[in-house]
Image (cartoon, helix red, strand yellow):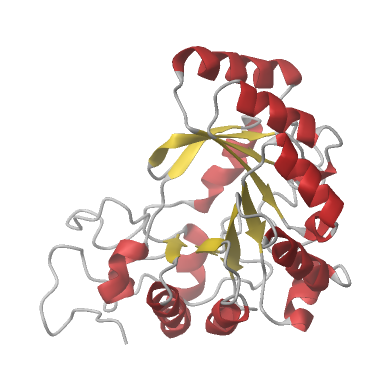
Amino acid sequence: MPGLVDHDYVSMTLEFRCNLKCEHCMIEGTMDYLQAEPPQKFDELLAYNAEHRRWSGLIMTGSEITLRHDLPELATRARKSGFDHVRIQTHGMRLSNMEYCRELIDAGVDEFFVSVISGDRDTHDAVARVARAYDRTMAGLENLESFAQVSSLTNTVVTSRNYSQLPALVERLSHLKRLRQMEFWVYLPMAESDSKGLIASHLDARPFLLEAVRALRAAGRGAVVKHYPQCLLGDYADALDNAQPKLFIDPAFWKQFSRNGFGQCVHSQTCASKQCLGLTTAYIEKFGLHEQELVPIGHESPERRHDAV
């Protein structure tokens, strides 16, 4: 797996069903054969952490983890095994049910990583390909506001469909007091070409991405960018964070993931960045290598430095 490892959290994929049909889904073509981690793997993880206290947080993820009827039970067991935090990664629609929110929180879930496609209802629902998905996700985030002991984070996959809406999304969620961080994950097609036309030019997306990061920092919130050239972030280069928790997932996933072809850049031999993953095969096929625009970290000259705008 490319990137850095976040040593504080561990993640386990416990579900491969989903009730959305998002255009940008990384595992759309593999969902039918990838298998969730079996119960014994979950048991082993809890037992290991109970003995060694290796990780402070557990992330329970999947295509849509809230489709598991035993999710509250899993959360309770995780907290009893010594995890200080239990996070679920979800599209948030089921959180629109306040009683379900309360059940999860009472069981020990204290962090909610919610996927939000756009601050615009029409765009969100068109990409999710499910009517009223936006309304239910937003209602779920609003419901979490009632619980002082929880925090929320959001994840937005940046595509050609939504990159220009990132600042508006930040503004749309600006009133949420439990929201501590927003993350922007640049779209990866998990293939050698962009058959869906969802990859956005890094150059076109840049002003909107920078504006979103700037607004979040001005509000005292975390801003994380993934899968984007670090040199193009200018004064916000430290927003790039490609670290990932140790992930337990069906090994067949990595064969498909490797088709991205990370790490391609004309400056890969001279760049000092410890975070940047370069360009992917599909990106280069569509937009080229950006030889003139990309600058190796640690070698910027004043006239070529990509300052934030």
